[in-house]
Amino acid sequence: MKLGGWLIMLTALIMIVAVMGMNTGLNSTLAKLGVNVTSTGTVVSADVESSTFWDKLFGSSGFLVVIAGGALIVTIGMFARGYDPSLILLPFVIFVAGLYIQTFYAIFNYTKNFNQWWLTSIIGIISTALAVGFIMASVDYFGGR
Image 1: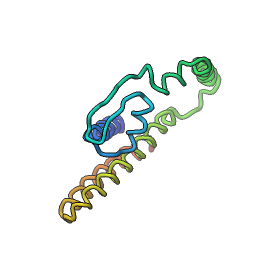
Image 2: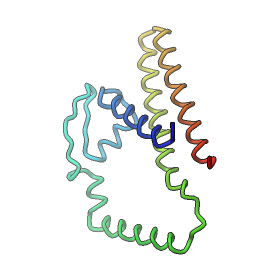
Image 3: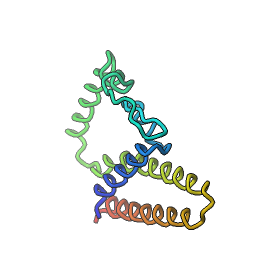
Image 4: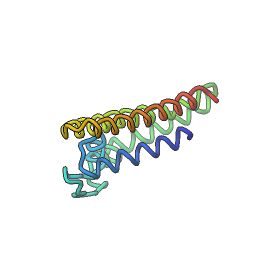
C-alpha cells in the first residue's frame, strides 16, 4: 500500500479511537479546531469558526501571514527548481506518526489495566504490524522507488 493510503488509514483509525473516548494526541488538535469530544466519546461542539485556530488564521495579522507565506512559497518555487518534492509531505508523515504513537500507547495502557495478557498481546501485535507497514511505506516513498 502506498504512503497516502497509510496516512489516511492511520488518521481515520486515530479519529475513531478519539471519538470512542480514549485520550489520544488528537484531542488537543481537535480542540484547537473547535471540535470538543468528552471522555465518553460524545461530540459536545463542532464550531470551527469560533475556534482559536480560525482566529489565528483569519485574524487581523493571521490573514497577512497566510498571504505572505503563499507569496514566499510561490517565489521560492519560481527560483528554486532543485528541491525534493517529497519534503512537502514530510511534516504530515511526522505528525501522523506522532499521533499514532500516542494513540497506541494510550490503548496499550488501557488494555494493560485489565490484567489480561492475551488482550495486551493482541493490541501489541496489531500496533506493531501497523507500525512496520507504515515505516515500510515511508521508506519506500522517501527512498524514491
